[in-house]
Amino acid sequence: MSKVIIIVNAQVEQGKIVPSAPIAQKMATALTKGIMTSSPNTEVKIMGAADLWSKSVTLANPSSELIYCPLTIKLPEWFNFKAYNVYKACYEVDKRRKWVEQHFNYRTSTDHLWLGDLWLPIIYTAKGIVYGEVIGEGGIPNSYEQPYDLGDNLRQPLYRLAHDLLESVKATPAVYLMQFRMVDENIIFDRLWPFPATPAIASINVQNPDLYTCHWHCLRNYPFTDIRIPPSSQLILN
Image (cartoon, rainbow, N blue to C red; front, top):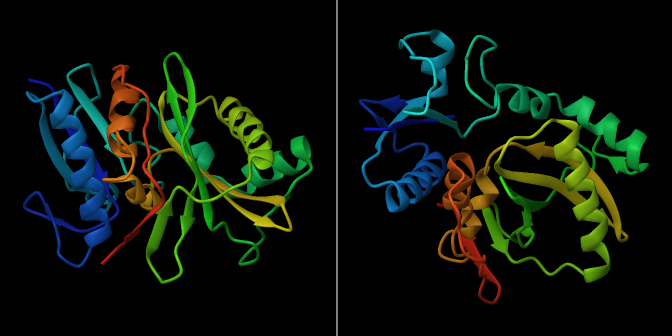
């Protein structure tokens, strides 16, 4: 039986995420559902990132029968999994911003200025890239909406930036989120996430398949049908 270990940025007790981390719970639940839908014989376990850092658990090396799915960006250097170098490159935010400035001449987020409130889903499959509908930050805290109304004239520049960013970090198949902001129709790049981070929750029950299911399909090189999104919806995180 194959085994998947989902790593979350939350406290986990006896294999369950504590109630004080509802966002991490939503993310892990969506990924688990996506795994079980296409791989019903897979054993899924959830681990807290803190347990990884403290080395309180003994981890086996990844293999075709054991897959690690981190839903958190900061991971120990000794942690051995397929996409570690990609996660590390994305965690080096300043380097990614300087790369964008040098290669695209775009402005980038600085400290607390121009932090991204938009996210472009990048579904990187073994056969190529599919760009999802942009996710936007809602009008109230902890809310996100998909699709966000973005003009067609901005899509191609965003797609070019996303494509070249993935090449620059030597991306492996997965779902990525490119975080950015628009100021007077100018793209302000913030950062690249190497997994469906929190805003991807907006795709649950909106996009079919949602971004967590797409992530699993990318990791396993499973095919999936065209992505479908109904009229604009908003999800509020409790």
